Length: 280
Image (cartoon, rainbow, N blue to C red; front, side, top):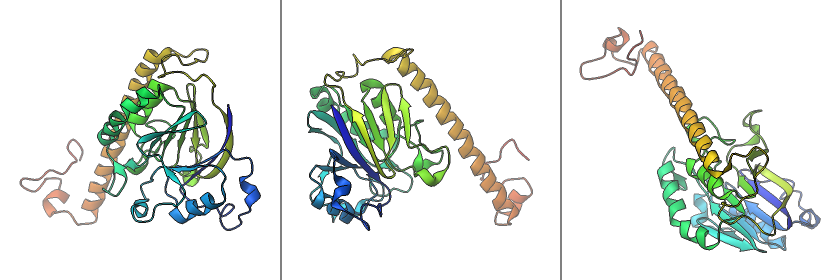
């Protein structure tokens, strides 16, 4: 089954709002928001769209609690089925300042476990929709834009046809891509707006165990081992980066004269540590 999807995220498209024409939605089979959009924007599109407008929450969507998008369908923490296509929603970003719709990796894994029974009943899913990317797949190095390990595991275990996310803006740098691939899963960054066609198999793999494998694909067990190694490498690299940044901040603090004199002399004040052990 071929579907034409209009994916949205992060900033409201002037093309679809300020300069809107009904014909711009012609041929669209499904509209999916990956978060961080004004509810009024989604409500506006739902008014003219002849297809469902689905959404998950972004980390800046706390206003949805009081003003949810009218005429739209929230798919957070559930599987929504449209024309036989199974769509799993898991919004939010990594927790970085305890704001609304922010989660730790452990909290995201608990959300995934809670919906696990529904996934088994549906015998998997075809499209994964999130706000944040998955760990190590088009995510950022800084904490707010790091991906969830739980989402990476879902891609390994169920091999969906499509993974849609936002959160990492395309103007953040050249390394941020509109499209990527994770084995048999097409990965799409929905930043602003993106229209694309996707082919959903008429007999999709059930629970990812019988997924069609591309040449050279090591299989589910092999992918798990690769992901485990890659995840470890990503986390170790980022831990080193965090430590270097903390040490640089401490050094800058000392140079600015804000630290106690004993610290500036290279000796921590009594009962305190500099965080610079091993360096002079």
